[in-house]
Length: 322
Image 1 (cartoon, rainbow, N blue to C red):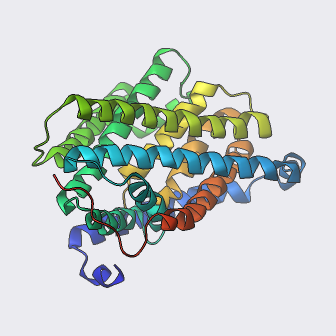
Image 2 (image 1 turned 90 degrees about the vertical axis):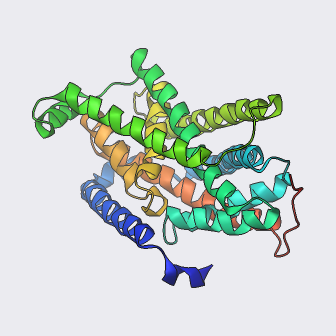
């Protein structure tokens, strides 16, 4: 796979460069908050007794990544037209998670294509499955966030609204409408890419796959949101709502797809959390919390590499053809 890096299309190179630039800017924003943390107060909150909990969070993350891997298998089977070896598909997904850091999220996709095509699906189907995965994640994410907004569980601080008002010339509704239009166009683009040349019928078997996919993705967002909530609420003592944190995690996770060239969304997710929470809770707790959460996900992805390798031997067997 390394030999292909020198022959990257110009579009992919531009996306990677833009991703790195956005990550660097976001990391600088996070850095400014990190250096201003009250170290004495932080020392009083941090405790070695958290280590067993962090290990538990890593295990939960690994299990929930299995949810995403299984969901991807359902999409790939739907596009391929037949069953695929369960554990090898899961192994490919988990093994390639680490590639999103080296050098970027795009390498995660390229690695998936490299391994999955050895199981039978065409390159077009693997690429389409990636876009379809994003479409479902965004749709479920919108359901979670809009439900939280409608019930009053998720709101923006007055300070943040003031900053948006200043940035948008006082037209907050216009700014929000623009974001929604951008989101709709993004979903349309990903859906078009996902279903391009799509030939499979919506059989009862495929509809069941989609239903299972919906449940798995919903479980992933709620599960990871629960971990993040425990970090903020129980470990750091923040008075924060459960559904607010679930929505917050959903937004930050989807942020990785908005900037696909950013390595593992590093900087992007931290920026979003700090920007949304620091006006309400101050800069220290949100910064400490999201850094703890980042440690959990990075270590989890590192552990997924050898786990995934167990199920992806060098000689990958052929899948059942259509």
